[in-house]
Length: 386
Image (cartoon, rainbow, N blue to C red; front, top):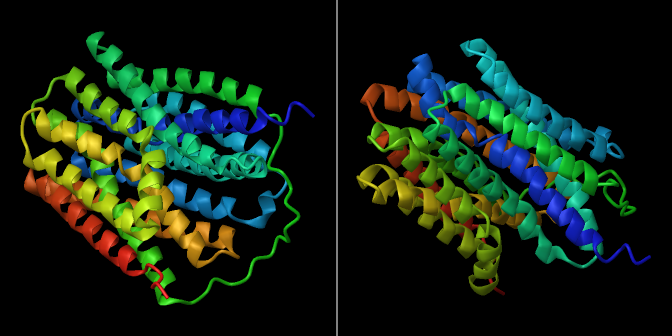
């Protein structure tokens, strides 16, 4: 039985790599590749917003599908299907040039990333919780930041070589294939059976839970505008191609330890206060990205976006599970739906506002306002001290 001790570390590392591939690259590599696509293919900001939203719609549907009981016992297989699909679909983006193809491919990529997100979490968390190592959850979520940083480094190399936008997708696919192989070597079994019945009770109908769900949806809208258009904002401000990659690299590197850091803050000031504080920190980044010129604004935007958005996602889910402890799968699905709806509407609204106004200033200020409201609503849902 001496193989048990490294198992939680092995699974946490596998989760890190899977999240880097499916989320950090699979979902967010669109951000640094987007300015090149807009320039070379003459895509409008509105078109760019629709493509982003197709990805988020796929993610929403995928998360709902994955939350169903049909997947029980097939988690490992479905996670690998999602990871493999994410790899292939990145290559297909680089081989396509039509708006219809982009919409379909990014929709399917969203579906794939949701499968990896849900099923990999169920595998990793069952192993690390069984070993009493819930502290390793932060490693798993850190994979999103790692994937963003890797894709930024890739883009920095490609822009110095004057490669076109398609090369970004093809190299993303190659890097994803390497990640797939690593995960295949590490994940040798599915989630540990916990003997729980498949059925879950209905969610409690409380004002606090409703507030957490609504706040999470507003956060989905608020974070996604900068997460989608940050590099396009840098391009519009006349920043160099290498500086674009640096801004995205900063976002990824800040994201890597962010969940661990905000869990420490939550342990000190409380879960709901930490959520609200993280939203306010992100507001500063979102505003700075468009209000401050030169290098300062985009760098601050990247740092504060990366340093908060992954952690807020985790804190929001924790708050919801606290409100509905007996129905973890149902609340995960409902929270993801609310979040998904926000991040589908966000890029479309931002793209249309940017097209109408000629820049991303108004869209970013609207997003910042949404983040403030999200923080306030969720903070007000905190259980009152007896």
